[in-house]
Image (cartoon, rainbow, N blue to C red):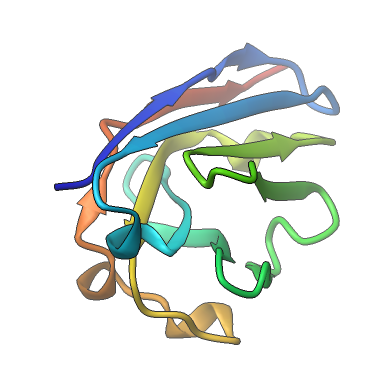
Length: 127
């Protein structure tokens, strides 16, 4: 079984940076795809960044492209989301996710394809 635990998060001002981490454990074959969803108050969950371990490929949502960077270590047990130039609109609960299906378009990812989720960590951007 796959287990995911997020860390980081907190409260920052617009324009500042924050780094989230996700520690993964369990069967490696079931977490070749890892990434991040977020959910703002009153909004649907949004997939924002994903990585495919076999190829190293990454995809980003337009809302975070150029500002957020996803990375994984060589053992593929730790995933990091570097968030720069944060905006008030980035305020949300951020979830680490894992699964086995890869898509070259961010719109291909859905909750149904990602059976493993972390508990979530709050990111608040406020002036």
